[in-house]
Image 1 (cartoon, rainbow, N blue to C red):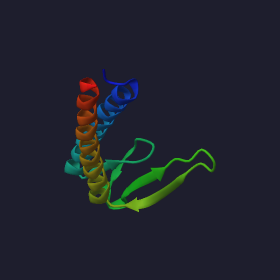
Image 2 (cartoon, helix red, strand yellow):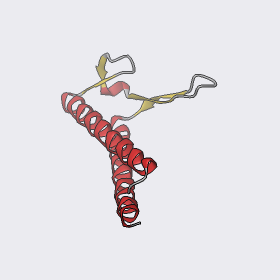
Image 3 (cartoon, rainbow, N blue to C red):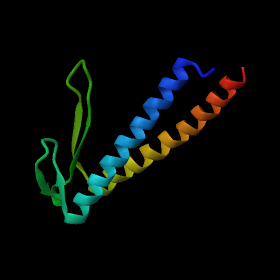
Length: 100
């Protein structure tokens, strides 16, 4: 039987892929329009770049304000690829668990 931990990891990975793919579609739409959404959801020119944030509970986090749109898009593409690789490994683990 597949362990609860493996099942939860597979579920989280699927959700992460789905969320990142939806965000990538939105970013692509905005890039195609020549605009991007800022941190507050307000549309602005891509000439002003994008924000990249890293939330931290202890000090409020870190933010970069001059991230080019193509770099942000590249991060999303890499993240999706990484999550899909993890999903392959988790599926293999699940197969092994069902044999036990």
